[in-house]
Amino acid sequence: MVLQLIVLADIHSDLRFLPAIGEKLIAADVILIAGDITHFGGRTGARQVVEELRIYNREILAVPGNCDGVDVERFLIAEGISLQGRRVDMQDVTFGGVCHGLDCAKVVREDKSARDGYELAESLFRDARQAVLVTHQPAYGTKVDLTHGHHAGSRETRALIERLEPILAVSGHIHEAAGTDRLGKTVLVNPGPLCRGCYANVELSDDGVYVKLCRANK
Image (cartoon, rainbow, N blue to C red; front, side, top):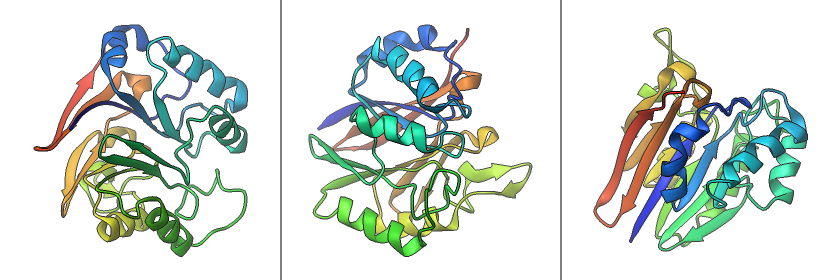
């Protein structure tokens, strides 16, 4: 099993770097987006981003972020690319996303507890051989949630990762915390904001998870 992923986050409707990474996008088996697709751009903004990405690759899976809102979430669902509360299997890998029930408060239409997030994730990954979790908020207390020397991630995301032990957990949100880390068996990746040219190239294979953090030029 070998899967090539391009991991994006925090696009904020800024598409100027896409041509520079076009060949990488074309070569990927799937593009994962860890939220903040728009900058409060609603359905129209989400459509612009997705249509531009589809020029390079139509295999896209995404969760919304705190700058996206309900209209973006509905658009992702309608287009069949939402990972929120959804499972997608590719080869021996199960992709799933959870935002609701954690702490993406601006996305959620009604309050949900952390337990809801745990139960949803466990149902998504039941019987999965290898799991990849996509959230917007990074795990608290890790290298991928540091901002100005302080940890600003989600305790719920961390607890979920520790509970599920996916092979890979993808997040964004903290722009200055681009990097990788580990929680037990799980490789953590925050690719950094695409609006600043940051992205990650990830290979999943039977031998493990290999991550290369990249930065595009305009």
